[in-house]
Length: 258
Ligand SMILES: C[S@@+](CC[C@H](N)C(=O)[O-])C[C@H]1O[C@@H](n2cnc3c(N)ncnc32)[C@H](O)[C@@H]1O
Image (cartoon, rainbow, N blue to C red):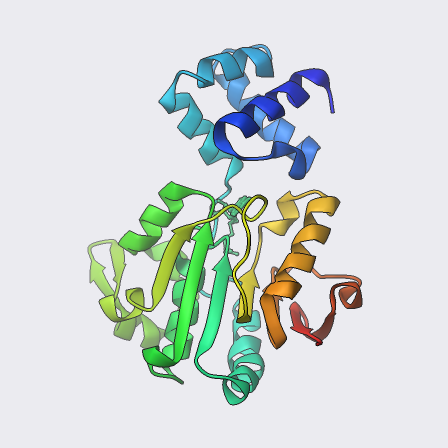
């Protein structure tokens, strides 16, 4: 790590609790360098000095490192595996189901799950915790108002049943909203709850270093009950699941062994 960026990482960790050294360096450095250059700074040090006293710059920085892109039923085929193969097994084995959507961004992922589960179980038979490091994303998730483009994969029946259209915006129904509890949580710094039947963590591990990923796979596995399932993103296969006491149940789904 070059000295300018390394020092910046230490300062950011002190100020925000976010450990940049656990995010892939090349990618993160490029993202941040474009941002500070746009603001007219020449180094990470200069940038931090200003950021330290400017809420605007700090928020802009936080927004840049948390990539919030998401949508309902992202990679729809995987959700159908969840619905038709993984959930029936989990429901048969244990109730009420305890579920965690980790790095849930603006809520599309946990709400997708709540809509699917509502077809099979009453709300009293499952709980969904949704967490993200980004407070603004959590606020937007709690509001539950979305642009049409993030609903493009939502089946027509569900769109009718669970959304209220308001001009070009779509408001998630209170009955689905009520099924998800949102909380701020930093995956790289805070303890995990236990025991979950299902953990969904998709499209965030790609931004982390190999060491951070290894640590997180271990922690996710330990947070599942034996037989519980980990659902990862479509570029995030675990190549040696047994190292983490996991086995492949389907593509991108891993079951805790014992
Ligand atoms: C690309 S979104 C993924 C959203 C959703 N899981 C999906 O697959 O559609 C990545 C999310 O990870 C969150 N994130 C980044 N670093 C994190 C960390 N250390 N702890 C928790 N969330 C983090 C970001 O704030 C962002 O909302």
